[in-house]
Image (cartoon, rainbow, N blue to C red; front, side, top):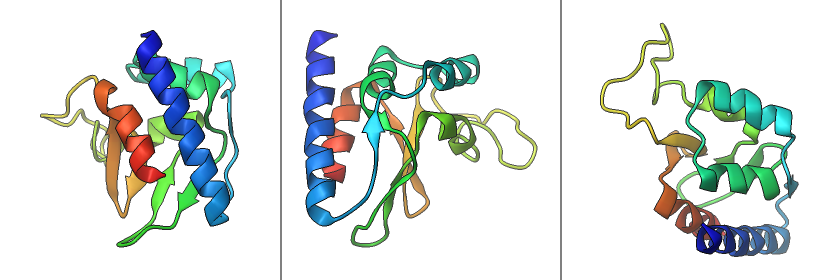
Length: 129
């Protein structure tokens, strides 16, 4: 776990630095515990995801311009609605067949949402940088 936290911290620091150099506004820091607790009522929150949002997650929506469409990072309070059409159906809310329980959508790239798959979370953040 310590290695994961160190990798996440390093990846987030690189992302913040890259965003600042690119002139992209975004505020990162510890998300309110109440937001994380509300998310945990509806979604599986891995230790890595809890660590990311609990220490240095986006505090507001961050829109990162990128080739072929922007990347949008959502704050913790936006995680539950971000699961629509991935974890559950957007119209009637039924659980989508084939969506792994441990996956949680944390970002959007031109409508293709990125999910937290524990070993890939740091790579996702580094790729965004």
